[in-house]
Amino acid sequence: METSMSFQELTDKMTNLYHAGDYASALDVVEQYAGRFPELSSRTTFWRMCLLSLCGRTDEVISVFQQGLDSGLWWAQSRFQDTDLDAVRDLPEFKRLMEISQEKYQAVRMRIERDQTVLLPDPPAPGLYPLLIALHGGGGNKDSNLEYWEAARQKGWLVLSPQSTQPVDPSTYCWDQPEPGLADILFYVEKISQKYPIDTQRVVIAGFSQGSGMAIYSALSGEINARGFIAIGTYFADPSSLLPLATHAKSVRGYFITGEKDRTIEKAREIQNILKVSNVQFGEEVHRDLGHEFPPHFEESFDKAIDFIFKERE
Image (cartoon, rainbow, N blue to C red):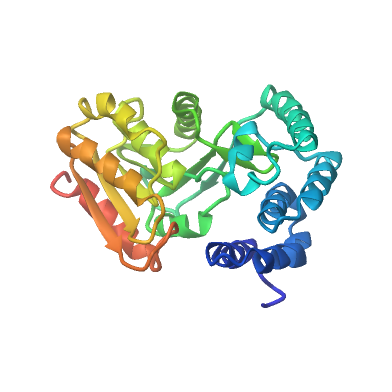
């Protein structure tokens, strides 16, 4: 392993070992390299708790949890539903620490501030900017996946990456509640439209994982003047709730980028069935060896998605 390992590389290495069932090696990797990313300690500390639990080292889970809280960390209650923590969830001391964490979460939740990242087109062009709204996944933030959205920026799109105001921990956020999520997105779109000249006929909303579900919800809602959506590694907790929106969204087109090895593929299929019933047009590209991730050569996938969304409309 290279000393210059990025956090994404650490994540990939840990995840691969985790899915292979080698929890001890996954834990070793996290404990060896987590110190290089202090700004993401909430995430790596939670990984350690889960992996220690899976390794049967319950006393150490409690110790790591306590140390995390003492250092100012906290996690939303939903995080502790993770089945990796089954070995410790019912322990009285673990329950006590969960209550402390929830108190910290609630205090932060009341004063959360909106935030965003904007990528301006490169090279800049005169006239109106097409707008791509790029949503992070659950457990991400405004700077997640920006390396992939460079493909849009380099093709003349202004990229708006809004951050949800639904925190998971001090460094990551989710879109668990669609209505507040949509309110956040509308706020960001209004602000960006006041600052930059936006081509309202060329607005697309995209996302990864839970962000893709939020993108679909937003596009179908009609609240955002989006011509279509791009969904990568699609996840939405309750696909059936999209049906009332889809029946009134026939002008929207979608494009799915799907991996056959993606653990959330059934959610994508459920959503696609709803779109078919509602006569909402969508395209899809399926990657045989892709898991829950962006595909290689994403710039080519982005081009195909844009072509599909706007074909015969120019």
